[in-house]
Image 1 (cartoon, one colour):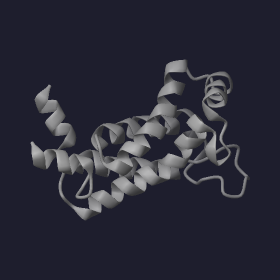
Image 2 (tube, one colour):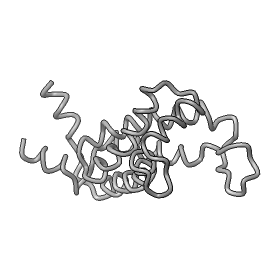
Image 3 (cartoon, one colour):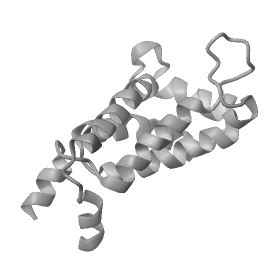
Length: 151
């Protein structure tokens, strides 16, 4: 267990990895805040749960996980704590989004509203950033970096 914890927080002290982590966290945060708190025009927890389970047909545990990953994962990424775990969670979540809802609509996002749904280009960007964090850790400016120096 101690070895797993060490692998989880070990990071390369590189500024570029910090930028990837911060970008990922800052881009995902508003989505999580919409879903959990109702900020930025979102539905809040109850509305989001209802939408994801009733309209999209997701199991409750998946809907709950989406909300938690986007909200708490984004905050953890910004702070740089357990970033590898949250990055892996985002890779899994966005891979699921591509397979279940975006693949049929092609690559491009629905900028002009002329498609039936969103393409997967945004999701690929998220997955790319998350893979960078997953492989390299939180980077230089992170709680993970501080913890791993003290161990």
